[in-house]
Image (cartoon, rainbow over all chains, first blue to last red; front, side):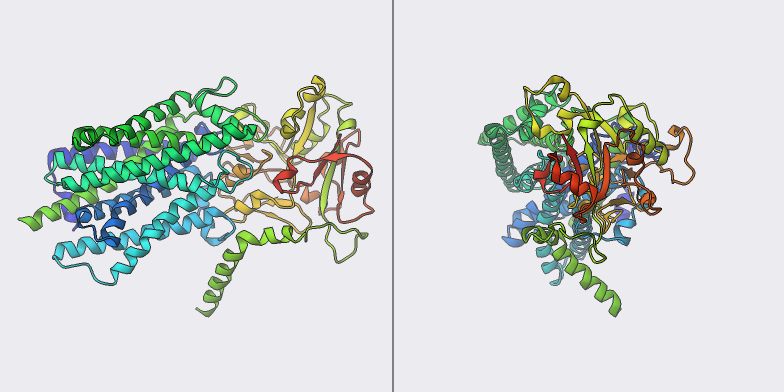
Length: 385
Length: 255
């Protein structure tokens, strides 16, 4: 089946080449980081997790969101999503791969990573995150592989696959819940220690993941003969609407408890995010961009005329994806460390090498998605002719 | 195959209990300290008492800090972002954030208080470590294995006291005179105070305690009601950092 990825137009190869160059540059910077140490990043004594771990958190959400097309199709027999489920599963695989890579580049001693398995520590949430993420990867590899195989042979997927697909649904919820628990169980970090963190993670994931999927579907519709179908696109937009509304609602809950109770250790983090603290306003413009994008996009989604115009919908989805990426992939992790337990308002900003390494990993993700989608779409076209 | 299955079951059982087990002890009050004189059956529980009243008399004294840094090959890195600290001084208002008091004497607010790992009885850093590279000994010391640590820094996120440091770069070029009988660390691992476990094993006091010219630092066994630390705690008013978090820190400050 993989041979389909080896035949393509000039622009396909140009895209593959650009991704490969970005990956290569990222790799060079990573070798430099391996040699010099994580001092190459903007991380420091007070802000010990930053851009890498934030990308991991954001991408676990994208991985989990595959369930938003899988669940209606398999649980509610919603046939319209038939063409999309496998794209959702491939997106999940690529996202989990990126998650693993972001962990690898973040640890100080990657050569010792096997210690995670040699000395399993069930009391650590990181142990459980490893378990659920690798389980999710295995489930999605089995499912997508088998479904695609059946599609190629024009037979229905085998019956034994159904229970595996059903298991993958709560499993998707579990990966983002456990990832939220990594943070929300820490008494040292009041910004994260909130019971709404897991629900908030899920809501934002179920908006940003499908938004990315929709953007990719609309791009594919433009450049290939693939058509997800008008109804599927609109249904996906509806899912994004509800998830985004829930996400904004949950954020407002957080703001209410922090500001009304007025407890400094909860309040100061939000101040840092939205107005700045002790002159450190590094995230303030970003957070307001996120707010404006998020609220504008949601408002547009409520207007049927705008939602039904696929060009505008494309813009709306990009805005939602970017809004949530800023919130989770930039603000959420760093703010937990500012101020520090000693009241220090530290500063952190990712360095060029850190950004290049991250970009390299994102490029690997897009590389995987490109190859998988290419195989799927070429196969479908072949079956039609 | 049988043994691997047993291992798996054991692990699954531990997993189910693991997350909650520590809590029950506390709910049922099982972590109370022994009131009898130290006997063979009760293990020691190491703790430190810092007498701030005495310590503040000698402003600018760094005898304990220098002694620790020397003993443990703690590098002297100028860049504050990459600093390694085992025992150091911070302003009172930062160390005791939760004791905020606007009208406290300005001098006292900015008086420098010694801080180090609290060797919590319920250490959050140990709970989160995914490789058991940090663990609590029977005598209460929170230990570090610098050869097992993968450098994920989860422990640093979990520590409510900022007591842990990460080697962002190789520390070796920043050690002036290497002390041969103590290991240097490599880049990419977390480190912190270990209550001088290597000196305790040789029946010596921790380096900082021994170095203090004012005798402000006391080290001893909380499980022995006759010990000096217990006597001092019984007869003086003392505070701890963030006891409300339930970590049960074992560094006591006499104010």
